[in-house]
Structure formats: structure tokens, C-alpha cells
Length: 86
Image 1 (cartoon, one colour):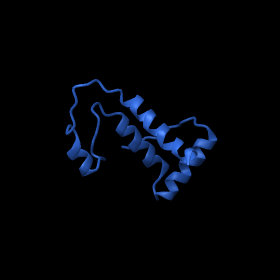
Image 2 (image 1 turned 120 degrees about the vertical axis):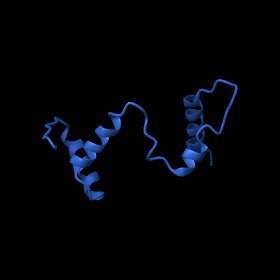
Image 3 (image 1 turned 90 degrees about the vertical axis):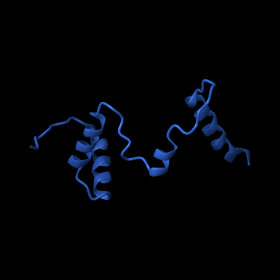
Image 4 (image 1 turned 120 degrees about the horizontal axis):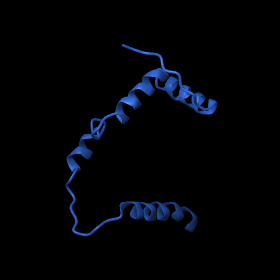
């Protein structure tokens, strides 16, 4: 059973969301409902992952403690700085 929900959201966010929904031939209500359904799940859902991602899950092991955020920052910084070094 569907129920009406009233939200207070900044106008620019609403405009962008409506444009996003229209480009995908979906209703804004449908997009919000699906988002709320996903975040309401207790366990993470991997149904949207690609088969290759699923196949690689747990394939790499290491004995050292990794700080993936720090490695990600370094990698992205180097990637974007390469443009300016050339």
C-alpha cells in the first residue's frame, strides 16, 4: 500500500532530482522509494555489483594493515597532478 510522504528539501536539489528522474524515464517517487529501501537494509546488498566484482571478492589477501583511504588519496592526487606536470 502506497502512502503519501511530505519532505522539505532545498529547491535546487528538487530541480536536479527531477531532471535526473526525467532523464531516466522514472518518477522521483520511485527513485526515492528505491533509495530508502536500499539504505533500510540491515546487511549490505551486493545485487548491483557486476559479476567480475563478485568473482573477485576476497581474492586478494595481505598480512599488512592497509589504509585504503590514504592509498586512494595518494593515487588520485598523483593521477590529477600528472596533468599539470606535463
